Image: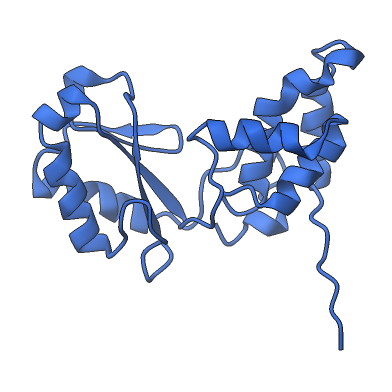
Length: 189
């Protein structure tokens, strides 16, 4: 028996937010909304943008899918593979390296079971990702999880406190367009 994949669709709240954003640009420049629409898509569909989700973004913006692929693959803030509930973005530039980001990365790999650039941890909670400067050099080494910075992670106790906080989150914080709670697709994230 042949099964047909279900085409992804934005929630009504996300559609309204996308339209609100797109209205900020002239109709012939709707493509200018691509970055915020990709952020919404990533939040709506489990923390990553699959090729099918990228096709949906292209359809919504009236552009060719390749235009979305180019943008989503250029920026490291977009995940092109499934990720854990929490994506730990570890700064790997000079100041953080001098303050122990290599040791931090090794420690995170050891205690979460996830590997940088690899799949999520076995429990599905953590994905580790090295990123360029997070612009908080005075507080190195640093990890960003969504919009929050975890600073001065140069002791096992500081790292353990961060992971405990993340493990205790029932789900990720609601996004601005989710006034009535989380869309079904996000309830498990």
